[in-house]
Amino acid sequence: NKSRTWLLSAAFPPHVAAANIAALNVVEEEPERVKKLWDNTKYFKKEIESVGYDTGNTQTPIIPTIVGDSKKAKQLAERLYEEGVFALAIVYPMVARDKARIRNQMNAGMTREDLDFALNVYEKLGKELKII
Image (cartoon, rainbow, N blue to C red; front, side, top):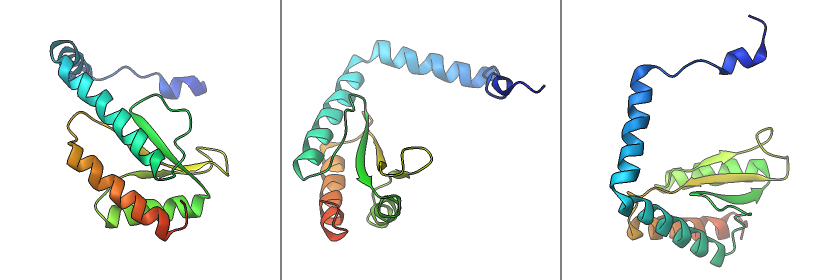
């Protein structure tokens, strides 16, 4: 088949569909998890902006920290990992050349201590790498 859309139009295997159904059941049956996710999202976004990072217009639990320079974003992601924070660099061609960023994905399982740890590391490295 020579259709480009064909490459991305495969059906989910049954076990993936079952996992998705189970996840939807959790969302419906445990609304406190959804609330915790949004609480974590709002807290992290507010705090990371307060130390000087740009998070753009995000209104989702995926919070970018916009670095600009791809080399610096990769360097920050590597240093975050060394310090115990896992967050991926998103660089050109996935984003514009001057819009490299780190992708921070919130979840309901994160504690306030987890978030504060990551925020402290971000602040330390942002200053060290002259990002903030």
